[in-house]
Amino acid sequence: MSHSDLVQDNLVSLQTHVLAEEARHPGAEGDLSWIISAISLSGKTIANKVRRARLDDVLGAHGTENVQGEQQLRMDVIANEIIMRCLGDRASIAVLASEEDEEPRILRKSNEGGKYCVLFDPLDGSSNLDSAVGVGTIFSVTRNDANEPDGERTVCRPGTEQVAAGYILYGSSTIMCLTTGNGLDMFVLDQAIGSFLRVRTGLKMPERGAIYSVNEANASSFPEGYQRYLADAHASGYASRYIGSMVADVHRTLIRGGVFLYPPTQKNPTGKLRLLYEANPMAMLIEQAGGLAFSGDRRTMDIHPDRLHQRVPVVLGSRSEVERVQSFL
Ligand code: P6P
Image (cartoon, rainbow, N blue to C red; front, side):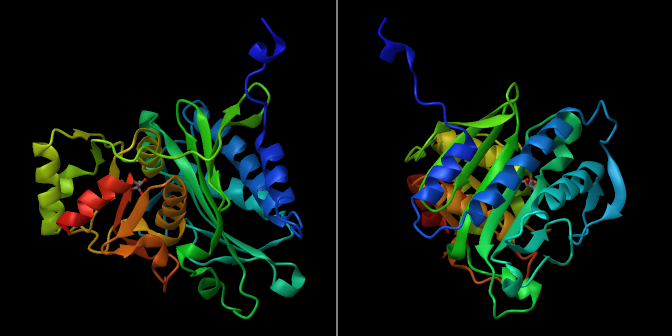
């Protein structure tokens, strides 16, 4: 067997990948690389904590509510603190905005080196932890606006202005999908060496997929167009897959194709998912992989946010499947 038969793809860690990406941008000062490195460290730490949650008896309610009026779980608070401790150390971060905090945290002004804002949902889908279902961290990186002293207005940027976005899925394996605007790259955490190893570069999602992902318990309160789409999907023999954890549902959609929907409902008339740290980062990833992401009749990333915790409806996935949904709306 020749040497070349033995050598598979090169072994590329997230760190190597990010440094190579940085080198492609003359004048890059490495600030974004440092931020992604901090996100990687927080992901490894949270992955370990998630795996041990029941052993360490940190499942269940924290006894407080977040700004969304949702019950905070102990693991939500733990994951939030891990990310804050990992990112707080990075000198290029101006603002940190979390689903778990009512207000953004201003770390430093632009004249103190604050170049980027990081928005995140520290542990999306955490209500599934007690049943050991995949949960995830979702993150979005935007540039700080030196002329905008107000933290909330600084982070309320359209998704098209994101400089990086990604998620870490704590599932049967720990997977990071990341984009810095130059395609979607996928990494798997090798726990034996504590490193995210690159397994896909420039991933393109299937153009179509006969899978729809929605909480059908809410179907009777969906706007009529969505109900007509569901009837068509049923009649067309589509498979229904719904985990109830956005990162897991979106990752399956990315890998196998299909469409993920969270339409307006009676309980959440503007949709349940948050624009800035759930819909926008997922939209950037899906579009980089060749798919589409809409909120009503608007491209999700074109929406100009007016509030940090603003909610939007979401339809994202394979191009032809999203277009099929749109044809009914
Ligand atoms: P429902 C989890 O609570 C979450 O924010 C997303 O991860 C998930 O897609 C959605 O809510 C599930 O909501 O109403 O179907 O339980």
